[in-house]
Image (tube, rainbow, N blue to C red; front, side, top):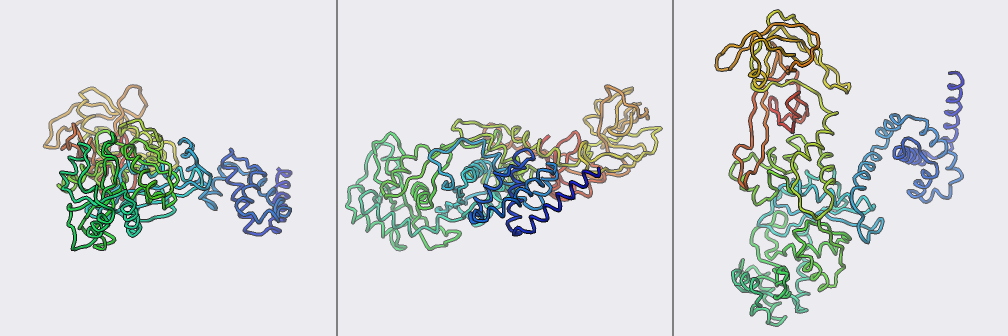
Length: 598
């Protein structure tokens, strides 16, 4: 012991000596990379790797390497003498970003490499339209976009594609940002497509002048029929000058009205790909924009704004769901016509969960008609609903990344997401008793007991104490299975032999039993309980499939009333718990919990 103490003392003196000679900022940098390297390599940092990282972050250190190297060696040795637990504690205290980076790298390894990707040059974008609340499908796209950006030390752009004022609202911008914050998705740049309207108008005039776009005044139903039949309309043959005049009349508030004129691309009306049959690039929308109000009345479609924004924003890899796959040719046609840089396009399958829908077209009527509470109703697949139901953002990230970027159609069951969430929740939450649909049980001969029950079977979360005097409530489901002569064990307490059950008032059954000792016996049903002397009334919402046979399921929310142990009265909104033998729940408000999953 003396020798060990002496060696530690010498090491400490040596460390102090060298660190005293080293700039404090450099020492901090050394320690950061030594801990990071140790964390990634089973507790042992490599001196060479640490020094390389230091120089990469601060190249000017190369000129001081002779002075820095001894200090780096000392710090690496110090870090390597720590246990992994000690290293993690120091990381959490001094450099928590190391843990975040490591988590991201675990995610990154799941995705295939991007073609033509250059380290430090990759730019991805997540382009939601602010026309509703973000859902699990948005989570998949946003997490994949961010993961690829971090995988190559690149950048992620959050771009609100807000060029349809008839559908967009100000609160949706905030909802999307809040959803991404919850997921831990951190964009490097946030922008709005509506800020580039002047540019869009300039590119529109460029296409008109070069004969690649024309202003069409045909009726919408005629346009639809012509596109279906592959017929060109008469407007197409007019001169570019005439189309420029029509275009300017579209922009004039005194000119064309809604649906009287459209700017269309000169595509190929005979193409088997109907997306190339002169689709609309601009249309007149008189609605006020949530950010621009009435400043503009002619708005680009996503087909026009999307590729231009990708190009001018420097996006190198544009990832989107494969529903846009047929529009790839139009995407590149517009960029080539304008002489703009071509990003790489990558499609992956859209994410739908069985028993629900992510379609805003289907969700909005449910909210408008009061069939669900709102965008955060726990039956919905929106991010705010998942959060309210009690899912962890880390579980959502894990789940969507497990699906990858395949084009293969899939409709995973909620059970897959629940399985991921369960594994993450289990070590984090305290355990309590909750008795649904309670039935009173009176136990003759029972001693007065102060039951000391652990708040978690493995973690040191402490204990709760429940006083009992022989009167309990147990779940009706268990009570109805019991008959005279049966025995049971009240969890964490003692055994009871049922003597008889009697009809009671409207509360249902009243069970009577007798104390039968505390010895553990095999085969006895184990039943959760609350003391009749101390409990809290609790309601739990249980979600069921929102959509059945393509229709709203009127039975999609089950209300379960019961009693919880008295300690649950201290739970706060957003606390997550496990009601033993019932399920994981999130506390929504005092006396109300939402079942996350079993």
